[in-house]
Image 1 (cartoon, rainbow, N blue to C red):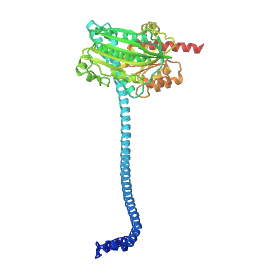
Image 2 (cartoon, rainbow, N blue to C red):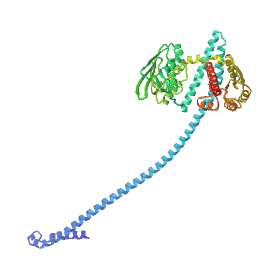
Image 3 (cartoon, helix red, strand yellow):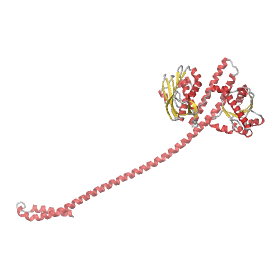
Image 4 (spheres, rainbow, N blue to C red):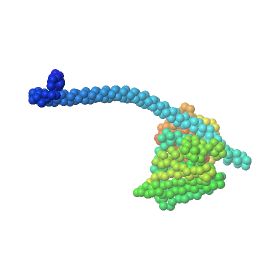
Length: 497
């Protein structure tokens, strides 16, 4: 309404000036009459301008406020929609994740069952392989002691080598199976490192001579004489690495370097290098050479043989000892394997005894006339064990099963019992437990083809004095019988006194 009034007053003022008949001519005369009207109009116009300005500002503010409100509402709507979609996606992701976790759990259970089945299969199959292998190696030994003709001896040597190779393969498979199943533990005992390396080289000397390959040892004399660690695992690593170099080097040289990297407090870090100038390994094959059953190439496999397990065992053993195997190689120029390992420095003085000297200590005459009960269900193995014992002039009797063995021990006075484990009826373990119920002193040795590493405690707990795995080397067989009889006699004498 105020706007209308303002515009009307302005129109009236303009109209009054325009319709004056003498507007231009009588301007001077009418000016005095119009001034009050104009002043009045201006007075009324000023507040109206201010009011109009306030209204425009208010309207602008309302427009801005409305725009902001609409923008905020739009943003909130978008956020709400985004949150809704995110919640839906999160719900779907959680559902998918739960499904995947369920699948992974099922896959894990299947993998564990498969691993257990594989371990059981390997344990069973290796037992079944060792039993006939015992017959092969045992009969070979017996035939070689019967003064064969020269051409027959050559055949028997080949048969012996094949048997030993098959046994080595079985042992490698078992070792790898135990490593993959995390059943191998690292021991910590004192040992003489330089002597260990020498023993490894002695064991591989024949293979090196056959290849017309020489050994060269570069040993850091600043390394302490007595160290603490797992000498058996370290020796196994070195045997596989050095043996591998010998295998692929003809008319060449294998260099073994051992040097000290660092020494701090009672620990020492050592670097081992095994370098050869053999056939070498291609760049492509170097990426997979440490995998199970992997070899340099099909041609190498045909030419040099082997199973491709040695380097895989090395890799697993070193990882168990917090180390890592490294490789540099070039085809036609040779290979270099190396690793670093931490060992403790031992204050204990290691007494080294040569295996050769240890064998000379055995008094085989002590075994002559000793009464032995052989408990074995396999007829061929019965015959072989009996003949091996009787060749050393021991008195041997055989039982086909555990029940008969218990009865024979009750009725006779044996000096020692050699007991198989897997037999029909009661097992060798159950038979030994029954024998221990009435005879605590009789020496009982387990002669078995089962994997004994994880069962050692059980064997000794039920009453076995010693364990001999099949197949065995005759010298080690008699050594254990000799030591068991001597120890048993000493213990009985101590008890009586």
